Image (cartoon, rainbow, N blue to C red):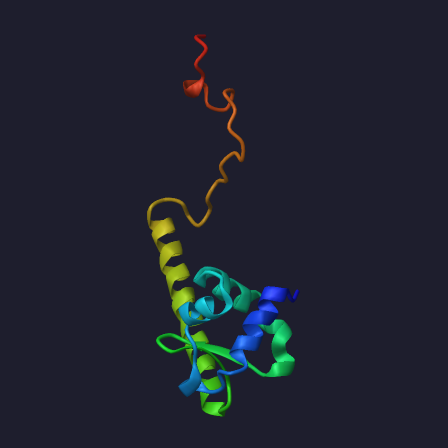
Length: 127
């Protein structure tokens, strides 16, 4: 869903086409008057709705920008695929540790609410 602040960020990003014109989240935050975390959140949540404007990319160490070259898009795709592989490796390693420590890949869920009956040691009333 598009928001007025997201549209404000989009307007600011229109001036940043190509990697050489990238803008950082802190720079955008100052320009539009919100905090950096909100800039990142709004871009992540709303960029899918901005496709009529082009493809917005982010590159660590550079910032956000509209792609102007195929190389920029391919670089981003390669980075995402690398992150996907790294995440899959971490999940597999963690599952192996779980099995090695006796969890066998199955973790019992904790109760979602605390009651004195489920934790009698926490009950202040003497039995």
